[in-house]
Length: 123
Image 1 (cartoon, one colour):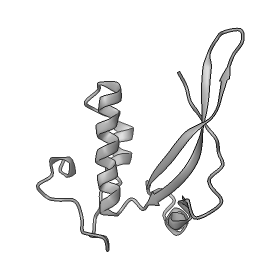
Image 2 (tube, one colour):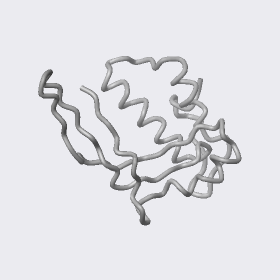
Image 3 (tube, one colour):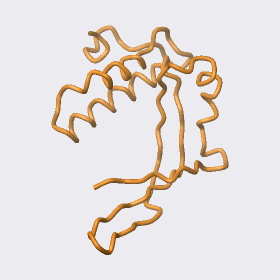
């Protein structure tokens, strides 16, 4: 089954994507993390095939530059959920590299960098 995503972000303070606009323009090749809260906006059923495709709407979005400790934590959550969903322990190389690019290189203002003892932060 596939899922479509409504392209509209909330127009108020529930849209935190603008917080990474400088990072997106200054470093366009960097990978960043966004967390979305979504719910079903509509469900379409193809009358001939019976295929059902839900469309999710974005209720809230927050973004993290890829160099923060929060981004590293979200990276681990993404990897863990991918493994649960697919049953695959290894990610495709391209996705692994993109996710690894999120690892913090310096401590952020909110609590430092990833732990040296954490096996998820070592390669």
